[in-house]
Each structure stands twice: as structure tokens, then as C-alpha cells.
Length: 275
Image (tube, rainbow, N blue to C red):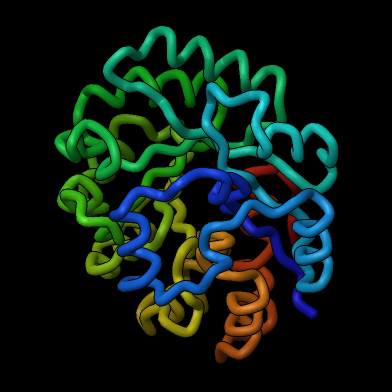
């Protein structure tokens, strides 16, 4: 069984009526079943992780919801869970950044997250100055920042998530550890070229079935980009069973697969020394 770190797991998908656009994404885009909108209990999630070799999972949480399920799970089992925090109001940055700094100080937060298409009517790409206070704060905290790239599944404006917008960000903030999440379709070639250009940039394969990843990315992972790509499921959107089963079936060298599934996340998010 392959060992893995799942870098993006949702534990708050259930418990509330999903918006119509999210139902459309489930049915039309992911062809998801009833498990798409579920919130696992702690024991259920741990059993799922143990069954599929997932050593640690990073739970996505709202930065203001410190009493929520994700923060509770991370507090009860810090050996198995860390946090990625979103819900950042970049149009009113000072209060948001104070909250972020406090949460990072008091909880096992390993990254902040922003989806450019999902706020501000998709009008603010990552190259916009509205992001700069967050970039500075993440540099000060040595906190990685994950940004959605690629065409969003919901019917939202996509242009803000073209990875080319990170070109200027990487130049202006070389100290900022950045990760593109949810792949980069249909701009895979741009994302791969960027990964080869900037040492502070990574890509996460969250919300992508491994068997659907493009050959160009698999080639990059197997050659000069072995340390640049990180594994995630976006559970329960995609199951650990499916993603890790498909990852095991890919024609990758063992050391390439291990870097993708485990070692790159250990180094980038947890600061672990890896072979």
C-alpha cells in the first residue's frame, strides 16, 4: 500500500442545503453520488485514511469557524490532521489578517487558501494588488498560500484562475510559498512552464481523478518536476479509495509516485526533511 498525505479534505460538506450551482457541479461535472455532500465523523474519516494509507490529511476550514468540525478534528488528533484556512476577506484586509495571524498561532494551520473565481465576482486575479497584504502576511508567517487555478467547476468567471497571473506574483514575492490547487485545466502547459520557472511554486492535483491527469504533467513529475506536484483528493468530492487506487495504477516509477503522494507535501507544508 502506498503511503500518502491528502492535502485537501473537506469535512463540512454536509449539514446544510447546498446551493443549486453546487448540485449542478456534483451531477454534471463530477457525476458524484450521495457521498458528495457528507460530513464524516472523526472515527469514520480516520478509518478511511487508515484503509488507504493516508498518514495525514489537511482539512479545509473557514478562518472564522474555530469551533467547527475541521478545527475540532485537528485539535483532537494533531498527529493526523492539519488545517488549511480560507474565507479571507481581501477587501477588508486588516481584520482578516489579524484573525489569520491569531489562528496560525493557536492552531495547526499549514496553509491559507483563496479561490479567485469564488469571491469578488471573479474580478480580482492573483496579480491584483488587493492580494498584496495577504502575500506579505504569508511571507511574514512563512505560511504557504494555496490559490485555485484552472476553469472552476461552478458557472463562475474563470479568467482570474489562469495560472499566468501568478507569474508576476512569483517575481515580486520570491519568499512566498505558493501552490496552485485543483489542477490547471485548460492551462496545464502554462502551469507546467511556471513550475519549471519558479522555485517557490507547486501544484496540487486536488479534485482531479489521477487517471485524468494529462500526460504532460506526468512526464514533468517524472523528470525535472519530481518535487513540484502534491497529491490531494478534495474528499468527499473524490474518494481516497478511488484516487489512491488510480495513483497506484499509473505508469510512474516508485520514487516519483512516493514524491507526489507523500514526500513533497511533507517538505512543502510540514517542513520535514525527506530523502
